[in-house]
Image 1 (tube, chains in turn red, orange):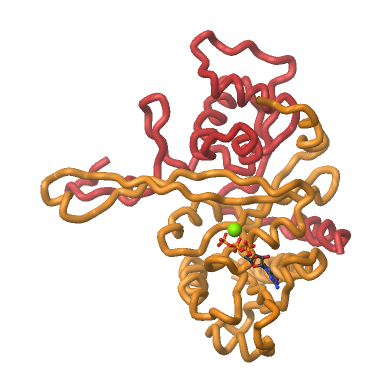
Image 2 (cartoon, protein in one colour):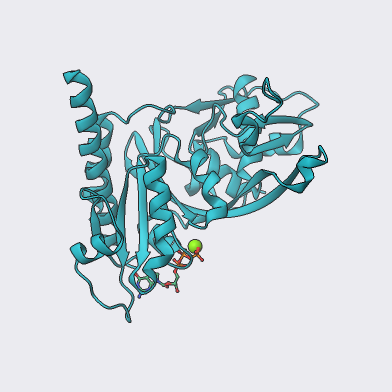
Length: 121
Length: 203
Ligand SMILES: Nc1nc2c(ncn2[C@@H]2O[C@H](COP(=O)(O)OP(=O)(O)OP(=O)(O)O)[C@@H](O)[C@H]2O)c(=O)[nH]1
Ligand SMILES: [Mg+2]
């Protein structure tokens, strides 16, 4: 990850996690608030699937955010992020949208948030 | 691992989108309390592992060591309507956690900063960082029994805030003022986004 002049590129200094011997930036395709749900009908996991992967898919048998799944499973969020993005890639989990990075929230969405919060008062 | 009675932890299947707000502040200002006051679920706690490349003497020897810090975050949830859910993340304000904000703040609507008027100076760093990082925020002033009561303008001045940064009084133990603080933040973000869009259209 060295830059042209041997200096560390900025991205190399970002926190990263190691899973199954691979390292990945935490800036993953799935955010911690991503909403996860197991594929319907369920897809069988390969024999090589880890206990954590199995537990995550089971936890997401109904709709739940990634961070809640991590908390209930007592696993670090950074680990669950990596597992979840793999499981989404392999079609075992589906992820529902959150706001993509570097995009301003739409005014309609902000209005929806305000209406929801005002109902709580 | 899934305990009995866990069925009510799930979101309605109609929910399509999640948004998030960060609740940031110095040690003991009331972050966890605020999240708990507004959350529809018992606040959950999770750990984020941060790996930092440490630059220093080791680098001279060509060795890059990394230190790992574990950060506990607590968070809560509010289902806003049948299709939208809001997550609130209580995030520590100490310097060593700032890198964590980047990842968390990505895609966040904004940041609610809680300050304690008995220890205003603890918040200076946090506020400065948020301004540097360009994250939209609102300041919620948590009132403790032995806090002196200052006016919003007095606090704005003491905290050296930008003129349009909202300042709201709060009691994090109560739902209504905590919700109001969140509303004030989202209104502020809304007006900021509106202004950005207007500038974009004009140019
Ligand atoms: N009187 C009063 N007490 C509060 C208020 N908010 C929090 N407290 C109390 O202040 C203490 C600290 O509150 P926490 O919510 O744990 O603060 P925190 O920011 O999460 O603290 P750390 O996570 O340790 O940094 C608790 O004993 C709360 O009961 C408030 O608005 N008014
Ligand atoms: Mg706390």
